[in-house]
Image 1 (spheres, rainbow, N blue to C red):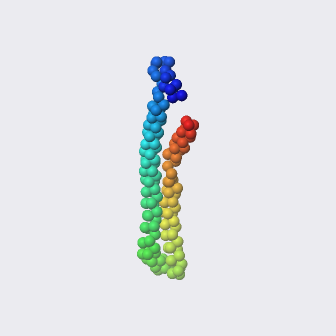
Image 2: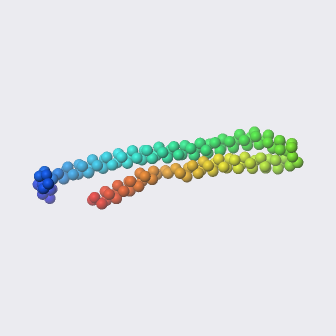
Length: 141
């Protein structure tokens, strides 16, 4: 059959049809190019996802960083200040100030978690094109 293919000519140009080895070589070359392009796309998408993850990490670190020193120093100062100028018992002052800082740190952590929700561990565009490529290869065989 390979002899029959190689002996055929293109009626429009009169050129001989390409050999089976040439066709297979072309397919392999195309697959190599496709794989290189997919890897470049994956690298680009991973870099974009890393940039998004960086901002989530920054907000989480800011929330945790604000929580620690605030809980140690400002809480005591504000608790005694509130006690000094009101008739609220000291334990109530600790509860009010602690609750306010808890809400602030919770808000910062929630913003950080929301940023992480937009991070995809598997790049979606690369995954989709890989599925299409696999489907195309299956159809060719």
